[in-house]
Image (cartoon, rainbow, N blue to C red):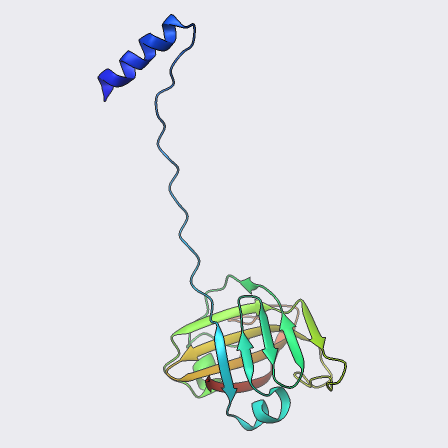
Length: 169
């Protein structure tokens, strides 16, 4: 290989050009964890009455009751035993799912409501700002939060509004 580079260098020098040695490629960044996606059937009373069934894509949660939540994933170190917010217990305790394997935090950018649908009451009188998807076993819980801070340990300016439970459909 060194001889090839030297020979190339001499050939280019004869033409008045210089050879540059090959550079090492930069290390690749780790790929982000896969998003929770798919179609889910409402199973909790709140999900059946407020949201209906759910279709999850990378940036959109589309609900059967005629509305959708749009918002990108936010990097967060959340796990089943993480606090929902300051003093509010853990995600596993709140959802009742002790086998949560995957969690995603999404910041709500927009809630779109179809013209023939009622406005969803995800947070009562408060504006929903964050959604956490917690999947484990055959269950998906959608936890909706209001407040300016993302959910997690020590978040004093956020609170849990509602929990909606689904199964793969």
